[in-house]
Length: 531
Image (cartoon, rainbow, N blue to C red; front, side):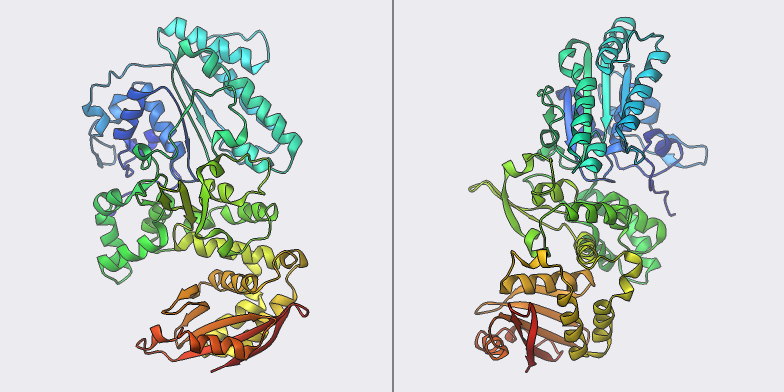
């Protein structure tokens, strides 16, 4: 029987009571609440942070019935969760939740209103009449009075603390005002530690980057710890065991085998790594949407990320795919301040566009790259639209994209080369002024082909070197070598001399060698030839 999947549902109570699937994260929750006190976790959007906050609230509110095995009103059996088998006392603590995940927060006045209304709600609930509007004083009074009246220390849960600031990056005045608000309301989490049972703060960016919690330096950051790498999202083990029946149903609906569907889903949605242990994690939003709709698509990337990414790209130095895929950085890079997006790697990592692909303990270096096919293609598409100043709706009207589709169907290479020339003629000068070299041109072409969903490989390794671009099409394979201020004959000679085509000799598709010459003076292709 097809199960109910919690697409867009962030309430733990709703998931359990309404019979939705819940992948049990309470072993890690139990570890967290019994071993520490103030925590911080950063994860990309739609990775289950809000659900984790909701689950923590249910634990500290003593709602044991939600964690035991039971049958819903609809007759759906919900299994017992791990924490219900432990020695947790299920005492009821006063819980203060602050949710900043709403997209409606645009102005400082709206942020002030949200903080005020949240505090006001708890003050009314517990019969407190505030003597001031100052959020810091009100927070202190709440923590002290709740501890005194209930005999239990307070639990504070903060969801998506950085949402407002991330949308304000570039507006220094607004960012500074927001930081002041957050510092004011949450500084008691350290100053009033005697009244605090537990604190948990989530966001996309590390708190050290935002400068919000400089006075709250006792937070334990579990974002990149091996022990908590799987606390949000779905691990490889969870996916292939707990969701195995769902994979089988999806495979049947799509007329394929279980193993083939598993491989397709792994390529498209897997590949996130949040610690040095490199445990594979899947994006739950995309997985559950695929199960609901019965088909694979780019659900996470399509759910609001494109516009935000283009805004981010507009504040970054000009990029190509090769600038961010497979690059190395030190651990300190993750702590660079988000005063702007001029440091692309940490911003793209925290946002979920890049992930850890490798870690060298000896050199203490991380290698970052795209986690999976969904993100790689989506990122390239956003980058393409940013360069060409187009939108998703008019992308199909792009001459280059149309030429690519014709090329894919007919092998009409001349028309495709002419479309590339037209595209390069329209590339903004600022994208080229600091990149006047051969690498820039083939990296940009690689980015475009990736955006179109092509099976394309950059720096494709052979026995004696790497070709610039290898494009695998249904009817043929194209090995492209680009020369900057040199001749097409030199490009073709290099392809032959280094045997770039040898590795495809047994493929069965015809191999076409393509030499392309760029001129720095013309800022475009001046000649090309095939063999």
